[in-house]
Structures are given as structure tokens and as C-alpha cells.
Amino acid sequence: MSDSNFVPVSIPSHGYDMHTHSLRSDGTLTPSELVQRAYAAGVRVLALTDHDVTDGIAEAQVAACRLGIRLIAGVEVSVTWQSQTLHIVGLNISPDRSELQQGLARLREFRQWRAEEIGRRLRKKRIEGAYEGAARLARGTIISRTHFARFLVDQGYVRGPQQAFRQFLARGQAGHVPGRWAALEEAVQWIVSAGGRAVVAHPARYKLSAGKLRQLLGEFRECGGAAIEVISGSHTPDANRHFAGIAREHGFLASAGSDYHGPQKTWMDLGRLPALPDGCVPVWQDWERSGLRAEDLVLSPQS
Ligand code: AMP
Ligand code: MN
Ligand code: MN
Ligand code: MN
Image 1 (tube, helix red, strand yellow):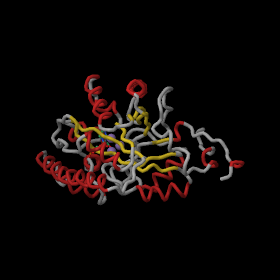
Image 2: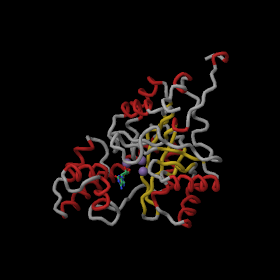
Image 3: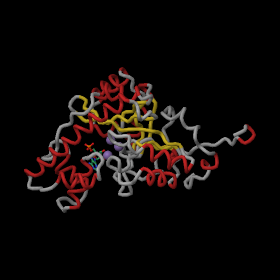
Image 4: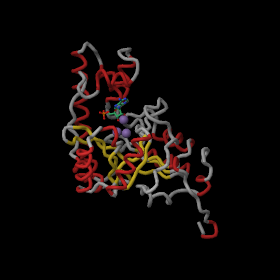
């Protein structure tokens, strides 16, 4: 594009979504469907961040190119930190780097064993066929607790996924198997080795005390972590504000993501994220320009 054609454009705040899932993990849309829906909802810079797997990125990239929007290659890595499960999102990764892929392969192996173990534990509660049911719903990709929740709903054991987690799958319940995921420093290292930025996903969900949070963020920075997810579809507005303050105070970049899993809307729909509060430095600050067509940026239905 020549300078004379340059149109200064600005992407509205809901035009960035740095955290979404496809059916390559526990979402329900194909990567192409996800990209199309995101585009229709006004998203112009979209990260696909499936759990422990990057298989959907190539397809999402093709769909994004067709629509002229920017696809950020991402992943959501499962981490065990002080016997608690945390999620670290990697953004703008080169997915085919071997250190990352070997690490993710190890997590998927644990995930497979864990799925079988969840099945055995639920059988003791007289729930038959849970592993097979969850595996069927996962359609050959990673098996998540989300698939067990859908199985329990489909079979009438619970009324909805929230109840499935509360009653069977959450920590302390019969079907819960403690994680043996990546160490925090491993997850960050895999992401950094793939050229990406590591982001603490949905920090409000861990319900850490102020002291533990400070410790986590200290270790995270120490091993190369770059950002925290200030805005999450699973946060309350108060939590968004709180973590905006934390990001500013600790000098982390700020991310925003819906954590969209499909039209059944676990948390929030696409294209509805509020703006990052003042003073936050967006994690995407140096990514947004490339690969975008100006005409797409001004068509957002909600701007
Ligand atoms: P897993 O990585 O297999 O342990 O599954 C974690 C996933 O379960 C998360 O990424 C969410 O998609 C989903 N999840 C966790 N807690 C809940 C909940 N209370 N209600 C609905 N989905 C949940
Ligand atoms: Mn999920
Ligand atoms: Mn998560
Ligand atoms: Mn997620």
C-alpha cells in the first residue's frame, strides 16, 4: 500500500480477543467457524488459544487471511503451581517449535491418563461410560473436563455444566484428579522458546490471597512472563479493575480475552470485551498493524 492510500484506522476495544477455543480442545466450533463468528462480531485481532494443543492454528490462519483479519497463534498451557492448576496463555508463538511441541505432547499424555482415571472414579459413583462418552464428545482431540461435563448433562446426571463441575469435577469432588501439569517456569520457557509472550490467564479465577498472588507474579516475571489477562470473559467488572491495577503496579503488559468456547457461551460472547482501563499497556501493542486491511477495520458492526 502506498503512503497516499494510507488510512489511519483504529480498532475498537472489542476488536481484540486474545483468548478463544475451538473444537481442537474444548470449544465447539471449528477453527474456521470460530474465526468467521469472531469477524462477524467485530473482532479484528483474534488469538486461538486451545488447551495444550496448537492443531487448530493452521486452519484458523487460512480463515483469518480470507477475511483480512489478524490471527495470533496461541495456546493455553495447563500448569501446576503449588498444587493448584493455573493457565498460562502463550501469544504470538511459532507453533511448530520443538521445545513447545514436546512439552505440550507430555501434557496431552497426562491428560489422556487423567481422562481414563476420571472415568474410573465416576464409575465408582455408579456413572457408567463416562470416559467413553467424554471421548466421543471430544471427537479425537484432547479430552477436557468440559467434555465430561457435557456427558453428565446429556445423560441427565446434572442440569447444566456448572452443576457438573460443582458436583463431580471441581477440586474436592469425586471425579476430580489432581493435575500433574507443567511447572510454571517450564510453561513460560516453552512459550518464550517459541517466540511468544506468556500471559497469566484469568487471574481472578484462582482466588489467590494477595500474598500468593504477589509470589506467583514474582516467579512469573523471574522466569520470563510478560503479561496478565486483565480483562477476561470470566471476570467480574470489579476483577477487571483490580487486575488492571495489579498489571500497572507490577509493570506487566495487559491482555483481554473472552475465553469463548462456542455459542453455548460458558462466559461471554465474542465481540463484547470492555476496553482495557487507562494506563494498561496492551500485550498486542506491536502486533496489530500487520495483516489487516483498512476497509475491514471500519466495518465493525458495534463501533
Ligand atoms: P481441564 O483443562 O480438562 O481440567 O478443563 C478445564 C476447563 O473446564 C476450563 O478450560 C473451562 O473450559 C472448563 N471449566 C472449568 N470450570 C468450569 C465451570 N465451573 N463451569 C464451566 N466450565 C468450567
Ligand atoms: Mn476450556
Ligand atoms: Mn483457562
Ligand atoms: Mn481458556
